[in-house]
Length: 335
Ligand code: FES
Image (cartoon, rainbow, N blue to C red; front, side, top):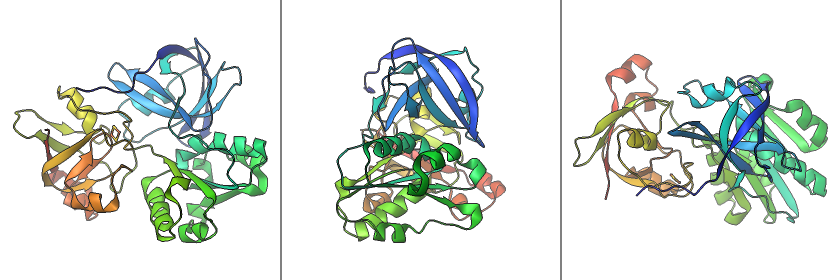
């Protein structure tokens, strides 16, 4: 029953790896066939036979001879980002050609690009193309601290006054409503970053009654409202159950125990993986952009590719010890 998009894999070799910021590696890959890319594209990398990760293409050679990606090391990495950060020049791995589901539409009178943290990897190439086209754009880059923000020097060089930084530890918190106050109905807005930031923009966008097709975003599906924690997963009417670890998605846990689930994007965008929550002890940490706020608030369905469950202790801000003693549980109801 499970089918992802048909992908064409090829071997690639690592040309270089360097630190682009604290915990973010810039990796340049060359494929055995040309890797032609465009703004907003990503590649999938096979980390292990049952583990695939998507990374935005920061830049690519015009002749397709290389692509550059940026990878943030996740503190809970079970292999994905840890594997990528350990790559050395000359290492081989399997990748797809650049895939596109965050296209830049050229020709708009004005653009706002918003990147949060490692989200700059998806936005960087868009800004470069807009600059080349002579478009009217503003690039806003939000981060915890300057050392944690990748590609800062080149962004400054390339975009000068069109780049605006918002750095948390400098007390400069982005005023989302203020930002959207300057957006008009013909502005196209592209964003990629943590779900809290994107959610704030989406709410302000709706409040201002701006046209929804002009708001475009890329998700990572790995940032949520609560810290990831382990929880118990059960399937209604089945003996099969397992514990989902903090660095594993429900979809991956289902695959691990041999339960087939539908999926496509694996990023909380398409809704193909939606499953009913039959029983819930805890709260659903909805990390998708598929459901509306009203649908999320009912806690009856979730996108198993990205969404998780948090114990009430976690959601109330309790300590780790309390959380361990009150592990959340979720029973899924497959049709
Ligand atoms: S597979 Fe697309 S939302 Fe989960």
